[in-house]
Image 1: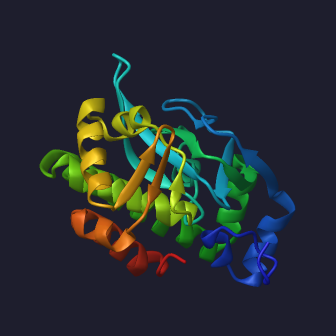
Image 2: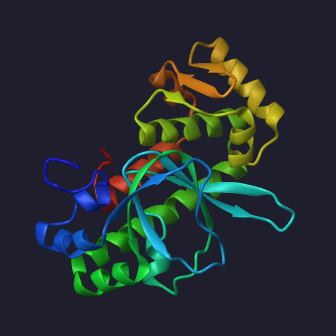
Length: 236
């Protein structure tokens, strides 16, 4: 909890006292266990999640089993809000990438509060616009930018959400999230390590020089942050 009594999710912190009090009786704090599935594409949603920390990977998949990440959410977002306002069917998969806690409410309670609170409803609509910007920028990035720039952008986003320079990641996970071959990730990670920007050991990446990593990233990182600032205020 923050000093205001709101959970440490930035969307919930933006609510006024009266609007948050509509939510408070329905919120339950849960642990988000790594690799646990919060939503499955095409399945009915039961809950909406407001992470306090950690991160959730939003992915789309093919029938052959391939998948790619289109957005990453954490304490600056919500999982399932847009679908809950619509037909209640998840359009994408969502799974916990880094563990943490979250405030959760059932979809019926979410809809009731959205109907009663224009501020909450408007906040969730703006959040979905930000999430769409993440997905659109990811498509552009994956299509035209080199692997090094894409990896730098991804690591910066992960660091922003975790607020930690140590990220528990394998090269296999990174390759899967980015939709590239593992050897491509290995080559780029080795180059960044030789440059003193990251330090990689099996199962963990340390971001040694964040400013240098930003110079290796493409413009997509700043573009999405700018969209977030315009619609929801600067991420804290």
